[in-house]
Image: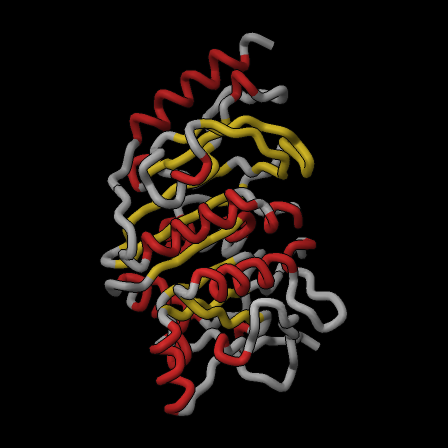
Length: 295
């Protein structure tokens, strides 16, 4: 049985464990709950359903939230900026009617989710293009709807393997240190995680915030590997970060600050440039080729 979660911030303390319960809806419908939501700020629908490979970071154990769900839920509580509803049942919780209650949709998903085509089309081509709405994808959000062109055009690319397996240490260069989703990392950092490479990635359509630095990474490849990017989608906003495979990433302070920065940018609480920067991808593609030859 798929367990779903309804999290009301007004009923949860910072230290109380949040449980995923089958008998609680992902979104309240009564007027009192709506008034409470308004007081609590923005609302995020976090989808962690797996129709393909299931990551440990989205696996619920003993009726508790998964590591990623707990991290984003706690982030909302501690920041006081938003509240989170987590679901692993999109058939019931990802509908046109329920989307009306949210500002941001957050995917940590895999495969072709059982969202009907009409609802998916509405989400991507209508809801997400509205001002004030946004989409965040972590890690395998790009390993979702792999063959759906409108989805990978929206998110910015498609998973195309991970030559850098879990636990691989890489060095990442930050291209835009002013963007709130990238600023927490500084100019450069090292991290251990599983790292994706992409297909259907169009540099002209995204602003790359961070890239793998092949020169300073042991396992090299002769091509550009972006780590995070942002883009406008109509009047809405999209933020994707490929990190997040390992469970300990979700307790990484800078990762959580980065996600919070992305949320603030989507909600227009902080400014950040989303102008595409294809010159960065071109430069780093050439740089990676040169770095790989030094093997």
